[in-house]
Image (cartoon, rainbow, N blue to C red):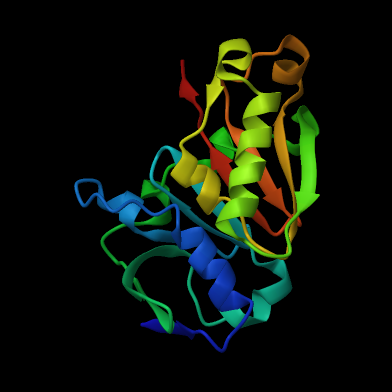
Length: 193
């Protein structure tokens, strides 16, 4: 079992961020787990409607005792995160996140900003601004507000990216990517209207 405690920042905070995309539904156990790829230097969670990814290259030494694989989340609270390698599932069981993560050179940045605090009012104002820019009627994009909120991370500069082709044509029926300092990414599938 591997334990990350709250004193191990930024590892603890980044792992908490990734875990936000983990499913609570126990019917599909793969979506309850954390996928760690030492080859890609990435930690990923998805519930099939969103995906959070952490590129842990800057913290690679922290993970030298971890194996690539699927990890059960034994505990995740304000003090610690406990992960246990699951021998029942292999890496090949996890959905191929590379197939849905848009290639960087096909993305265009549509919003770039930063927050120094993650207050409800700040997020609320940004959420309203986002929807003024991307009205559901014009763009076809609607994001789950919980997923939108979970994609933010205070004190980091972030950008929202969409596929260039979508931006040029005004249709946004593909994922929206929240890119946080190129360390954390949240891919959110829009609800099609």
